[in-house]
Length: 178
Image (cartoon, rainbow, N blue to C red; front, side, top):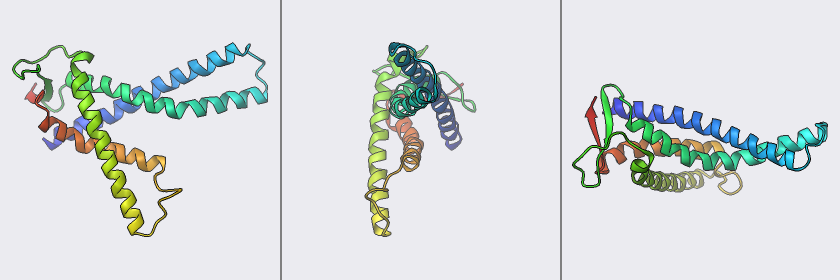
């Protein structure tokens, strides 16, 4: 089972990063490009290029965060449709007696909502542990307490812990042989 969880986690990590990055870059370019066109498409001198670059960087962070949540739904659906080392996650109906195939986005939505909430709780617990650990070690918590890489590592760790927990506790997900 550990092999299955590791394969699922690596699959999730790779495809979530790839899909969300591509989607965020495309939406960012469309937004900045439309703002550029609305402003009358001024000539691309140094000041305009710097302003466009600044807008791209400013919009990208929050946009990528929003896109990550949506792409997690797509990746979860894809995880339900693939075999990993001879095993597969199957989605059952609400009564838990029949397998849903093919799996659609609407079918995965309730499982995905539970997973997102579980990840959020795990990240909050990790945040309390990190802040408590830093304060016990005498490190500064305010001002430099939780930077972006630390939060990213906490999210990846939360998913690696929540994926097996979700597969064990959720009645709508079972593991079967391919």
